[in-house]
Length: 448
Ligand code: SAM
Ligand code: SF4
View 1 (cartoon, rainbow, N blue to C red):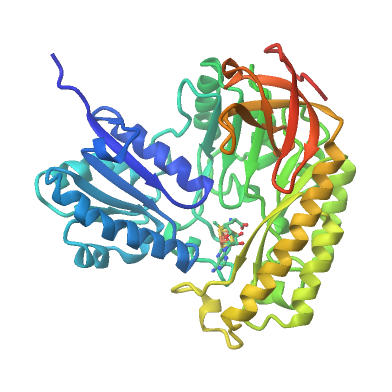
View 2: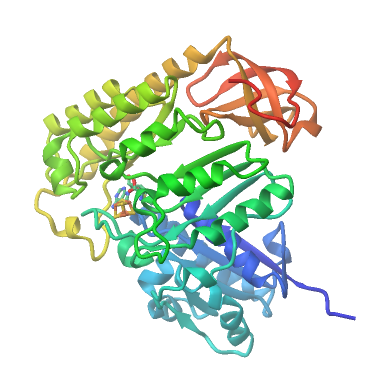
């Protein structure tokens, strides 16, 4: 008889890329470890970290601190720190936390079983090699689920002046199209409905591959796989968003009408200092082209306030751009100086109080824009992929439209994991309310 598998608990911080990496960790360790729902049951506790802002890094360090007491009652527990903070801090984490057993960066996932085995033998391994090898990385699509995150590339070569990603995730590397198609096809064959293709800048997909395949070509092939109901992708860099990719939003029925297109700032001076490679005008031209290729497309973005040198007039330019683009939602951040990045040593660092005041004004404007765009949807009958119980009211279900807005509605629990047709009845600043009309048949497109 084989020994029962041990229990693995993973706490994930940060973006979708990190969520996908956590799934890859679980997959890599699956022969020996089953996922535990509660930290209390864990034999191995992994923290998958984010270094994008100082605040995210601090949260990780405070969790690691609190695990010291936790481990006193479970001396057998192994603790590992992975992801971007692990890459950045390496050995320093081991020195600061004697209860920590292993440290591994985002490019070491395929070596995780060996690192854990060394941890069990009492070693304290650190693996922060930024070596290429995406072909050997474990798959991230989880069998039996209806939504999958599929990593199509790793790393980033863009070096935006504020961003730590190129330093902690290494050089860009694309995965072979055949491997991606195999993973997605297997996921769909098991009943999967929605796939999100992930990379830091999917538009540069394909560089360095033996077969010359661009991102639009990959997307066409993925969208054409039998059973594909919804396909999305993130993230798209505005500089590289080609007319060919824009046109696909009007051509591929499975491609969801939503694009996350991080603009960061509306001021040309700041965009140049950020090394973003586009102007406000070029960005807005692409927005217009997207809206004409796919009327009703939802656009979301990322915004940074208080980048070094940002004046009140620059900030006002960001607000006017937000109105012109009419974003449906935005993630917005106070600029946070990161180690190794160029902007950390730029002159004109903006005071925290100024950043906080600008962020509050920006978020109030976005709330107004989101409410307005949600209100336009009221009265429509739309397809929702039901993800689970609503967080606010467990008697309601929650899911997403093809255009990505969250919809909460009363309905039977057996709708979870299925497509449902819902009439949208009320708009709120962060979601919509709906009335269940019917469970959709499994064929698609269900509602245009
Ligand atoms: N690769 C994506 C792109 O180019 O848009 C996103 C990468 S990053 C994980 C997500 C967002 O974090 C960025 O779009 C940016 O708005 C924000 N971000 C990155 N570095 C930051 C910093 N130093 N301070 C504040 N926000 C930051
Ligand atoms: Fe960071 Fe820029 Fe690369 Fe995005 S494109 S990960 S913001 S360096």
